[in-house]
Every structure is written in C-alpha cells, then in structure tokens.
Length: 361
Image (tube, rainbow, N blue to C red):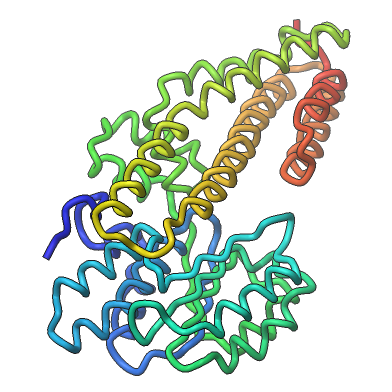
C-alpha cells in the first residue's frame, strides 16, 4: 500500500540504492529473520550506504506490523524511515570535526530509552570513520544493546579507532559508484543521456551530487572560469583576490538547486507532521543535515574546481619548454586540495593559492 505524501521518489526505499545488488540482497534477507543487532556499512561517500540504512531500518521497524498482518502500518513505518522521520529511527550525525565523547554519551542515553511506537528502535550512526576518542565509550552499548535495539554504523573507511567496534558488527561493504551507473540512474530519472554522462563524470561517484549538477545550467561556465583563472593572474594580490571572489560567487550560485531541494524537504516535513501527527518534528535534525549538505557541496565544488585548474597546468606542462612553473602550480593545487576540507577559511586559502600560481597570459 502506498501512502500519498510519504514516498519520494516512486518505488520502495530499496530502489534508492544504486548498484549494490549484493549488499541489498543480504540486508533484505537479514531483515526478515533473527536479525543481528549491530551492523557496519563501509564504503565511500555517495555509494548509497545511508539510503541502504534507511531502507534496512524501515524493514526492521515494519516487521512487527507485518507479523500482525497490518500492511498499512508497515508501509507507514517504511515510508517514515525512508524520509528519516520515524520516531524510532534515531539519526546521529557528527556535530564537529569528529564524533565527540559528548555525542557518545548521548548515543548511550538514547539507546537505553524504550521504543516509542513498537518494540524496536534503530540507531543510525553516520560518518563513524571519524569516531576518534569516543569509540571505547560506545563499545559495550553496541555489543550488548537493550532488547529490540539495533545499531547501523556507517563509515567511509575502517580506521584503527573503529576496529574494535567493527569486530562486534556484521560488516557490509559498498562499492564506489561508477560514472556509467550514475549516468544510467540519471537517465532513468529523466535526465538527457548526454547531460547525464557529462555530470556523472564530475560527480566523484556521488549520485546526490550528480543530481544537483544535472539541474545546474551553469556547470560549464564554472568549469571554464576555473580553467581560465591562470590567464587572468599577473602576480598581484588584487588580481588574485578578484579572480577568487568571482569563483566563490559562482559557487554561491551553484547552491541554488540544493537550497531549492532543502525548501522542498522542509515543506514535506511539515506536511508529514500535519498529516500523521508524528511525535518529534525532526526539524532540528533536518536543519543540521541541510547545513552539512551545504558545506559538503562547497567542498565538492572546490575539489572539482581545483581539478579543472590542475588540468590547465597539466596541459601547459605538456607543451612548455620549461615545465618547472606548471609543476610547482600542480604541487600548490594539491596542497590546497588536501587542506580545504578541514580549514573553513576557503577565501584565504584560495587567494594564497592564486598568488602562488604562475600566470599563463
């Protein structure tokens, strides 16, 4: 049974997961039986881990209603979990550079609470490759949670801090999405095939980013602006600052499709609250997720732009009589790319980079 206003896009929640047939088959089967209480999904950002976690949580939370023959309640549970709005699906996203000890205390506290609507609850812990010093505090709770409590831990990789927790979990690996897989899904969603192939190549294996780029008519202009930056530099700070200001303004424009999606999600949340009267609106969690997504978009844009900038100097290196300057530029670009995600002052970093870059006038 479908519930109008809850499904988006059409299909069940598992249809949101692209190119992970083995993982999906395993999880769908596991949710039907005596399911282990702790799971670890490992794979790069954009591979579909979180979509799979939502679908898996929906199946777990729907099981009680299905056992009672209540298809409508089961469909509701799955739909709310798909939208990350089920009261018994607890989403934990990092609040700083890593998962803090304070967040670990909050996870333990929330794990100890009884489920709100049934006998089960699911704690979805995202980006736990950044668990750092908080890992040991969580070990006992994940290893021996209260009855009916399930943990789904998501990580881009398996650092040493996560190894002990991983040993208590059933591990499921997610492969990076290839550009052809992303392009195929975009075409299925109505994107022109040529456009789908173009944006998939710049999406970095992230389907959500590919969707944003597909709706972004200024992508080609931004890439051209990054590629042309070396031809606008003259060694002065003013030229560097002007060029970087224009590039950052273009990134601001690139946020428009994401902001539009965020506005739609807020409207959908308000509709669910009004229609189903769910306990806990989830408004704060949605606002926090929107902030993280905006920051990730900027980081992705900067990486894409720096890649286009590097391509200009690689082309120069191939034809220059003396490639020393181009080699130095590539090294400076790589250093900036490594720092940009962890240093929030992107303007100063980019201006410093532009001053170091040789002009190609």
